[in-house]
Image (cartoon, rainbow, N blue to C red):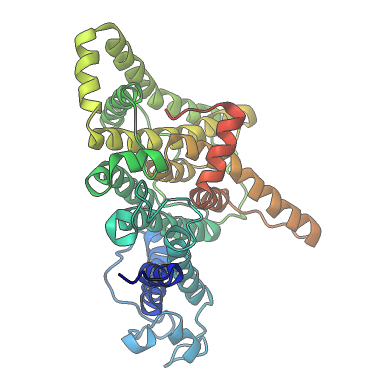
Length: 411
């Protein structure tokens, strides 16, 4: 038998594993189309308008935009940034969002399945075998998160609000993806490479109690027993759009308002402590719950929910302490839910890391402002989004560093 030279075998493997240019072009083009939809989300969602109807139209002349004038990136370039009929200038934000989204789609694919910067171990017997054999679920969940972070940051930069519906959508995707991951991927691979959050029995019982407490708190809020804090906290603009330059309303008793949120959070903490006590003190409950959490799907479900609780918690505690200390609202509830949504996919440990990485982006921005001698206040949401994206991509480095520094163990 004639043996095939090693370099020929390697070339064939590489040719088989590396995607063709047509596939990469498709990923880029699909990302641009998603970016076009994000432009609709950025404009309509905070104004509580339908994302489907009416079709896109020129705000100047009111004429519908035909398909050939709505091709992502290209149409703006061909039209030279103006409406075909009335000549009204089209903001450069539209092609910018489309281009950035397309690059996110292409870049994340290259990082995960070509450069392997994330360290997924694809192609090895213990790691991912590639995009088609399970990697698509990780890619889909993470690209949805990045797209939502981009839209939330654009809205926050312009209007100083983050629509909670956008955060809730990502939360559902994250929890569902974490729960469904063991059906698509080997549970041992998920745990080894930390592809999705996974909870231990103790964390699972804490999460169960906290979620039951959340249900109680929401019920009390609906019945009016617990009073809501602050008006217009759903992320929608009032009839008069938000004006970041407007002076803050000094008539709002911020410390009193934040006490309402402490009351709202109390059933959540109480529920977690009660279920943990029952789990520890009743052996039959402990054995039964351990059997439940032995199911990979249950571990993924409660892992995603725990990440949501911790993501919300670290920001909410900062919001409460900052408001009590300074007598003004510190951070918004949009930031709370944004980090909670990201926590469903990054997990509890990494979302805490992302929260502490975010201030460094704020320092960079402040340095640029100081050097340019300009002062422009911007919301904190974009810094949180940048931190989440960085931790997602450099997950392995952050995990190794903080594990050595604090002797962390997975929850």
